[in-house]
Length: 235
Ligand SMILES: [Zn+2]
Image (cartoon, rainbow, N blue to C red):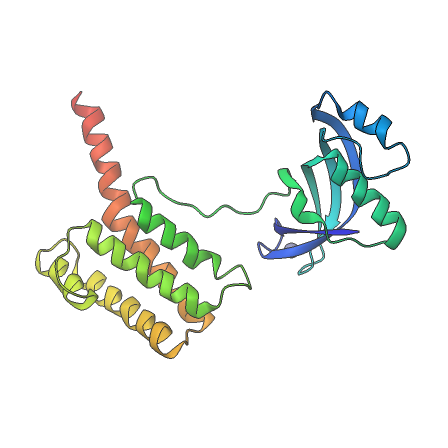
């Protein structure tokens, strides 16, 4: 057995899944002197050159126990080590040496609209990851959500020395409606709580993300779509 960190296609949680099977499918990058290495170390199970192999692995999510199939790329050395350790101990934590080429079922992707500025999208992904990955606390997620909002305000041309004045500035310039303004302040307050008190519940983080999605849809996605349509109808 070995473990590999995956995002489960069933429950969508990032976890160290347990894999019990590893079967070679084909050599993807043969290395010319791999055969020589094999001749020089005929008794070693682990030194066989550095061919890259594609291999199939079959395992189970440690959160929901549902099965996952992987197609991975792995060095022949490591492939053999995994197999020999499996025989020797029945267990081996070597999954980090495998790179995943395909996963079935696939995990849900975090949807980023291409109209969102890069820094907005990056913080959005961080906030979203905190809802799925136990390594990040909900407070960290809430801080990322606040940073996402702040970057969005800046990208919309807000001026002011802090988030309070930036949000109000955009509302005064009618870039955002009063409803969006009030919700943006709510995100700001939840972010402050997370940053200064270290607290944010999972429900609060999910609400922040849901609001940010609406905010970004209204301020970036829809204007971008309208602009694209206007250009295509006038040319
Ligand atoms: Zn799962």
